Structures are given as structure tokens and as C-alpha cells.
Image (tube, rainbow, N blue to C red; front, side, top):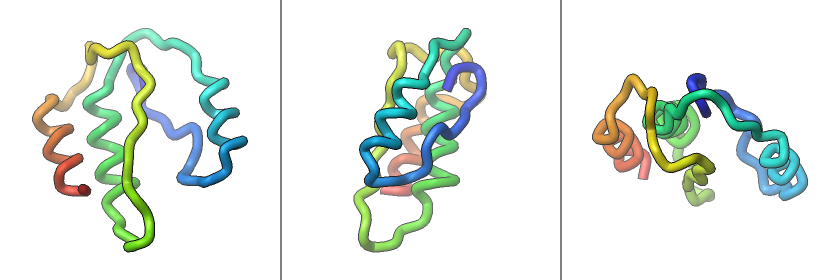
Length: 82
């Protein structure tokens, strides 16, 4: 995520795919971390298959500078999807 939230890899246990996606990361112009958390919770983690742990790994600069949503909304979405 920077000013736009995009998925680089779908859920997988293939470490090669994950490593490749991480290597493709490039710094952007801004940070929309709260928007990214909200989006992944609502679109990806909202489905409970009963077999998977649901976690979010965030690689960022640590400061949200451009989200439309608040920290509170991001946390609420995370709590709702466990």
C-alpha cells in the first residue's frame, strides 16, 4: 500500500510466492495503512473457513499519512474478523 491498496499475492503457504512478492515491493509516495487494514479485513479475512489462522503482516514505514479511514475503523474491522 501507498496511496493505493493493492494485493501482490493471494493467501498461500508457498514461501517462494511470498518471498517473490516481498522482493517486488517498492516505496511509494504516501502511506494508507489504515485503508489497507480495513480493506484486507473486509475483503479477505471476513470469510472463516474454520481451518486457517487469520493474520495480517504489515511492511510499512510506520506512519499513516493518507488514509481515508481512521485508526479506530481499521481496529474495529480487525476485531470483527478476529
